Image (spheres, one colour):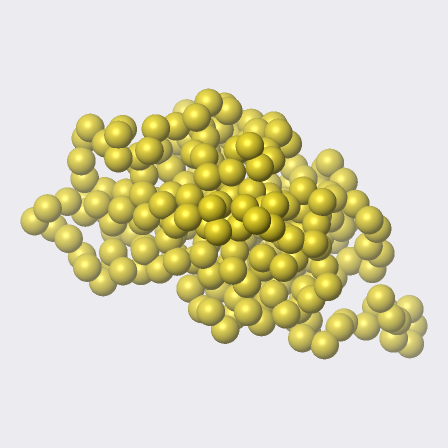
Length: 255
């Protein structure tokens, strides 16, 4: 990376507003969406502690105080990206032109309005949930496929939910969220087939019920516990696991 006067690293074209670490070594790399909160932030914290090179995406980096604190002392590049905006996603991908991404984690997600069952469907909210949870991961995967393809690991992990399992749906309700996760499961299953000739593994992972803004305070798992288990799972992933749906503890989930 070139330097400006005074030893400050000059930002490559298209990276204005990014936080870019000064030195970049050939360490394993990971990209995480929604890296400013919840599971995304915990992924950043734990992979940074393990010495990974991290590309941390979020909609508004200026408001991502916790992420900024991590980025001051770690090899973390923070950049803006809205997974619902194709131009934003493509701009972010162009800003990382030439970089390799060993593991891409699609962790952005929303739950939408509560009480979404027959007789009380908010279709506008449902469309927004599908835009973030289903189309968002596909936009990101498509835009960054070359970055993943040039890496050693070549793994795409999409954070889904047990509520996206059709087999496991015995309680109904949550129609918007359930359908968004069932749909992203199918989308990533197809992506796994499409990308197999390039040696890219696409895997779906259920993080469990976690104490986050989405999961609520009654959830039994802390983010640190879920992410630690997911990291163990991710470390094992390869082409033999592509197109499969796993629970955070490593067992395979029913579709």
